[in-house]
Image (cartoon, rainbow, N blue to C red; front, side, top):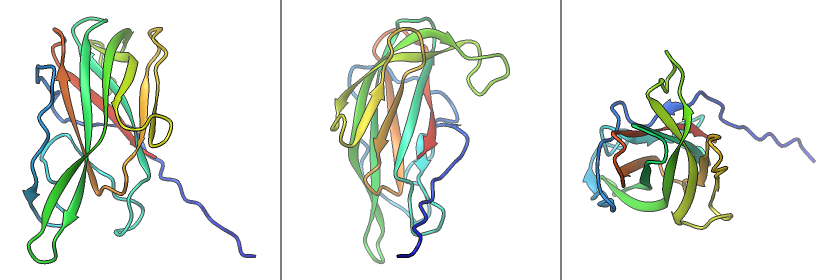
Amino acid sequence: MGDTTIKTMLGRARRVYNTDSVVTGATITPPAPVRAKETTPPLADGCIDTGGMDAASTCNGLKLLFYGTDTADQTFIARAYGWELAGVTELMWIPFPLFAWTGILGTRAGIAGGIVGTPYFFADTLSITLGNAGVGGEVVSPADNSIAHAIFDIKGARFVSLSLARNSSSVSLNALYSRI
């Protein structure tokens, strides 16, 4: 038998949004299909390129670490959508729901000069509200002011968008993502 090589994508965590999300509300409106070119992301901000090590592949999943401003114990909701490219000559991106979470910010703050600065607090509590826990995703939710994270299968999506909304008075939200 020949050798089998399994490649894993390694990379630094990046911000999902270039500018923090400031949407308020208890629900998130799903995105609508959009017409686009094959290599153009369907959304300008909040859209993660899941491209793999070559042009025809994607990563297997994503890891998210949520954070926001204001104070600890602020609540939020988050929803991830996969984007499927459809068509041959008239291309369009079609969104489909992947996972959703509710979260609570803890007291663990970022650091001065870091990608997550000192006015931000990481989520320490996460719950899956849409998706199959233990099958296509999981959360590590210590609820003790340690940093919580979510891991989920992207189901072959070429792009993944993340929608965030504040349930309480947190001023802004964002997340770090890593491809896995």
